[in-house]
Image 1 (cartoon, rainbow, N blue to C red):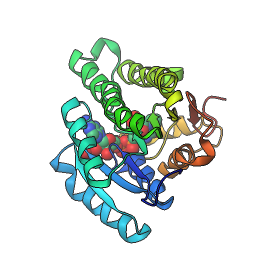
Image 2: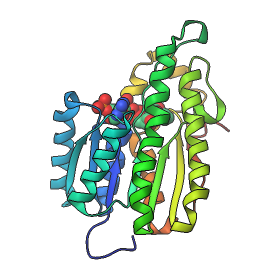
Image 3: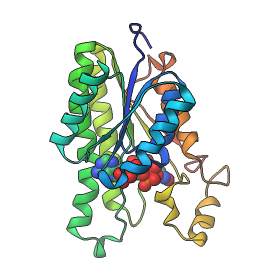
Image 4: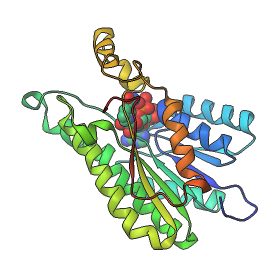
Length: 252
Ligand code: NAP
């Protein structure tokens, strides 16, 4: 990255496990100091353990911040603490996300709101807090985790699909707002990736899904993190406002 002697700083929301942890490890492998985030004290233990492993493996700093991304005040306090501790924020990966699946007839208002609050408002909260810092720096990268479901839809996921389509809307609008400040904003849209989120599927469901994927298998968290690492790199400086699918050929 173009910057002073200090190491660049990346924040990945929801990074104690799954795709978020792989993204934090990818940034660390590229020489970033990384800020990991988890939703509550309950997730502190494994998130702290992940941070210590990153520090010993990659020789960078790894700090852990507890913040519920759905709560604007907690997200702002986290970004303020990062800037006061590490002096800057170069890359924000908005990864935190949840599902509350069900057909619409059985989907409660609470399940709709919970998914929108974390997956969509959470992205808004973090973009708002980080953009302020990045605009001052005249440098930054924002990478938002969408989903193929936000592009193509999926029965049983109207809440999740709406949130992930909304993430693409935020991405394209913010890319236009921030381009003149040397800040790029892109979305990554994974297909089916092996994590706790997809572990909830039965073996039969997994087999049926895998048969629809061109490459015939689920992806790994590292498959997604590799694109996130590239979008955070100098080589991706001229890419903004895009939603890029990482789906093993699901949509072909
Ligand atoms: P996961 O294994 O279920 O992990 C979700 C992560 O999000 C956890 O680290 C969790 O933290 C965090 N999180 C949840 N609610 C949060 C909140 N309110 N505030 C802060 N952090 C919160 O999920 P994943 O499969 O890695 O998915 C990561 C992202 O990729 C999500 O946005 C998901 O929608 C997207 N995605 C996944 C797939 C897939 O097939 N797996 C496909 C497309 C898109 P805690 O540990 O504190 O709960």
